[in-house]
Amino acid sequence: MLNIVLVEPEIPQNTGNIARTCAATGSRLHLVKPLGFDISDRAVKRAGLDYWHLVDVRVYENLADFFARNEVCCMRLFSTKAPRCYTEADYPDGCFLLFGKETRGLPEDFLDAHYDDCVKIPMIEDARSLNLSNSVAVGCFEALRQQGFPHLKQFGKMKP
Image 1 (tube, rainbow, N blue to C red):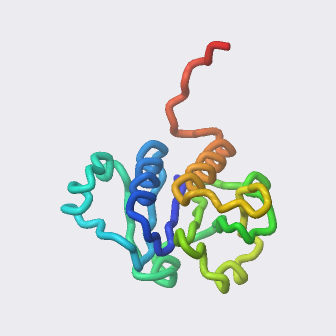
Image 2: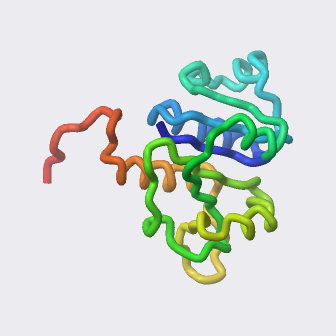
């Protein structure tokens, strides 16, 4: 199973889109507080997230709580400051893909402590970074591609 970790997400629409990606791929969604929005049953229903029940969502008080409650053998930290491209990393089963808050990304000291686990999505110089939900989709599908899409429905051949 693939694990998507959002550290202090701020924008509810991004998290909703990411939850939908998790629902479609069978990935687990980990949310590290503080959250910039409410994910109570009432708020989720009001937002029309009719797929929320299909997602295994786990919530943590902070990064220390996240690591205390999970055995993380492999993680990839997505950051514009990373030393290598996301396609140069491996993504074994059970890998955790970590993404930071929309306005600042992952904490600098955390990135420094796990430098070898950092990857980036290439962009043209001086470009604004991708939207968080797009970045998660890129990372998620690369990990699943490398794993051979083990549990996803296979589509028929496309016509030329």
